[in-house]
Image (cartoon, rainbow, N blue to C red):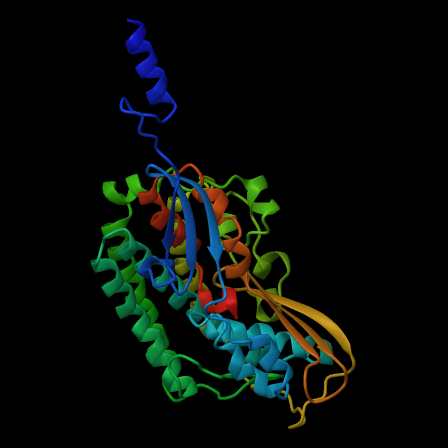
Length: 383
């Protein structure tokens, strides 16, 4: 009996009947792992299949965008904003142009503001479609990514007709936008939104309620409201934890002062809630696009500005509600044609901070589910 008790004690301490001890293992996930959504490396400390600790290693995609902005004329910087969050280039441009306009004390005409609202919400839809599609393929479901990329293709085609480019649009200008709508563009946009509405219902029937998807996401990666605020989370990450904060409502800018937004909030705080918030935001963005089309005012699409922009000496911070959270630009001008400093507040970078906390105590199989629910883009993390 005494021998059996000693064997039980050894097993509890991680030592087998033959004196073999278990030990922690370091596992490198990435930087080439497909489910890290870019070149992100996670150094995972495992005890069996349980994650004990996680160290994110970033910087593999650093291109010095903020330094490049200091060496380009103010208007020339807009094109480089496309490369930060490359799934939401138009929203990046809106934040940058808004910061310069705020410093210069100018405001885009109402028509330009509504064009920005319409195209910005379409960009939000495109970003969320990628988030949902890639999330499901991370978890082993292949059909959703085909459907979401099919629907995103419609937005890319509309952007190409409007801006001349599908991806890096370079469409915003300080004081307005580059082009007005081509003939019949708004009709095509309305037809696309009608079709997307139907497709989203079909997509939800496929995913929401699927017992495997729910088992992989419900109760996994829980973030409580106080923790979310303490880590500076914004966007769907914050609203999925029950915190009602959306800059379009709580710090309204441009046309959002006239167009009310229904903030999408969930209380569960887990991976499933973050998925649901993004789905609900797609429906809300469809509604906002329709409101913008119906209310689209006439008039000019831009304010006359000098070719060589020289914002007055000073500093400002301008933030918008990006697809992933608070997307801000801290802009400092010394009165010259070039920004003295243009610092980006990328929501992907800030939201990534909570990842080690979320992974701790979860199984290795939950790591992919949790990191996918953050919806990070490494172009914005590393910049």
